[in-house]
Length: 428
Image 1 (cartoon, rainbow, N blue to C red):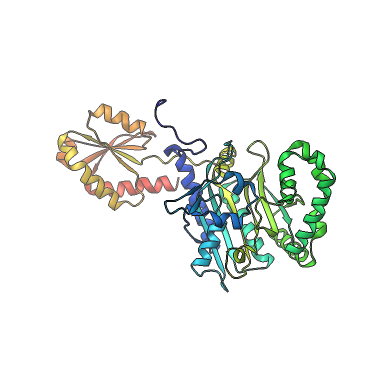
Image 2 (cartoon, rainbow, N blue to C red; image 1 turned 30 degrees about the vertical axis):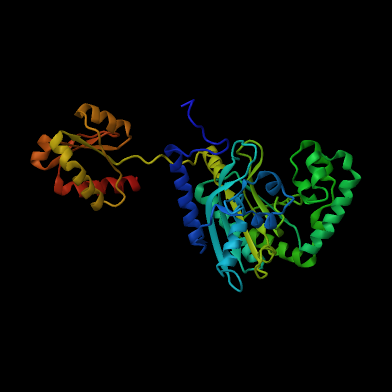
């Protein structure tokens, strides 16, 4: 419909042929997170704009350039959520879930950023986030990383690499920030426009620049690990030891700083080269000051978020996309009398066989035309009910995808036959 209303740029439909892969990945994620004791929290899509300006930082690209912000009818500034952590903290504070408690939470859903759309990065994108509150040690940092590592194994994703860094305590980070500003001021002529803007507001983000012309300058900048305080250094060393003990390989990346202001100490990214240029599919770290920043009592926190679109793209690149679900049987109703009882029989068989995928023919038509639709549906078998079968209270079971003869099945035996088909499908 070239003359019809088009979807908003960067906001895409997920069609039935694609949603099967989404459902598969979501089911695996839920299973893995259940196994670690994380409970799902469902968050609003719209929050007060102040929540994000306070948590993410007013001078970040997200708040300055990318948020979808509007005034409601009461004149209050609201925004579509650009990420999930701030909303999760807000929900924890307002619901009394965080103070002097340990909480393991996860969420999923759409996020919104007005970026330039590109492969794996859209203006409406979907994230799964995991958050742990009330635990300050490196053991929980290791756990959230191990959750992601297990998820990759369950999905069969091999081409990912863990990059790890520590931002240190706020005091050490402030000292490093001053040194970094001094360094880049000496080379101000070599900074691009974005980096000059960030120099006085968010200089650590300069280290995250992807501009090729900036890489030599960034490589010569002071190294963050040289400024770590003793406690943060010990924390980081213990985290590395736990990951090594659990067989998780990692690469230290002293330039990894993450794009949001609220991170401290541990930061990490799982990156892949399966999407062309190296890219992150899961990023996170520790944000011990965020709960207090948003009005709660000081509470340690750590977590990550993964992008579903990127994860699915990696899964497809590695050949791990699951096959589309197809009907087990297509019920053909040849004749007016069969049409009158067909719907009732279909409901009875669905009741009797959990997990059965039965597609009922609707819309009439002759036997030949219905069998063509049955074949086009991808169904493994056709159940044929015509006048003769109706009179004898039998149905014809016709294989559509494998060798075998058509045979008659009494109505009283159909449920047992269908259970066997479902069992064979689930245990090939």
